[in-house]
Image (cartoon, rainbow, N blue to C red):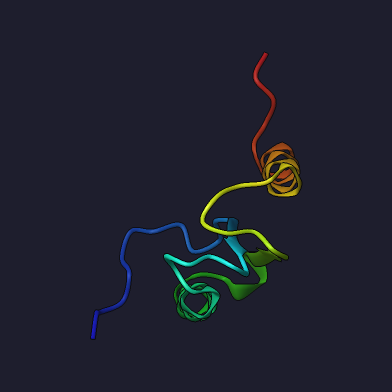
Length: 78
């Protein structure tokens, strides 16, 4: 068992994405990881998205979600 996180921004926003057909990392592991993460940082700031039919890859839908997440959480660069 690991000790508590120190010196970490516990209000950081996290987006975790996972294909529901991933043959390398089962989606259950993604679910377990996100539940553990929610105990370590503010759970309201943790988002877990799954993508139907996606394997160990990415998709246009996922990339659009990542772009939206970045646009919401990072300030624009002048």
